[in-house]
Amino acid sequence: MSVGELAGLLVAVFWAVLVTLLAVVLVRLSRVLKEATVLVSAVTEQAVPLLTDAGAAVRSANEQLERVDEITANVQDAAANANALSSTVAATLGGPLVKVAAFSYGVRKAVAKQQGTATLPTQPAEREELARLIRAEVRAATAPKSGLLSRVRRAVKG
Image 1: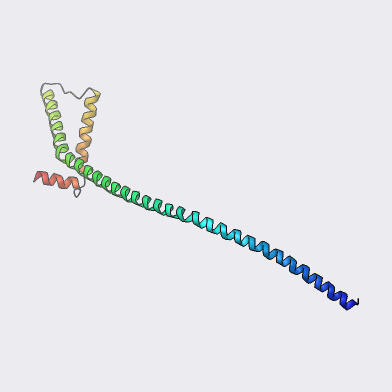
Image 2: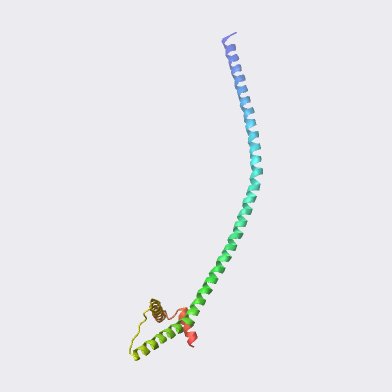
């Protein structure tokens, strides 16, 4: 056997080993790809129902939010109506009640002065009531002239 033949034999053996190793790698790669395909199909089968459920949950949440928006709007309307009603009642009844209370206090004071004894409220409750009436009268006198309360007063007075 010559050196050339020996070199040819070594190259042939090297190529045979290389081809065998490449065949083994390709077989393993083929198995990995098959397993990946099975895994992807399984994930797809499980993901589609999950996405469907997630879409249904989002739609349901949107419906609930729309209902909450409607409820919030209704509550805001009710609060505005209650505020307007309380302002109207305060304008209609508050002013005359304060005037009646102030007038009755003035009458009591005048009668007491005429009798010779000036009586200031001695009970804490009476003093607090008098202070509350005075504060209400001051608030009414200093209220803005263009507000809802003043418009209601003007409408009531005629």
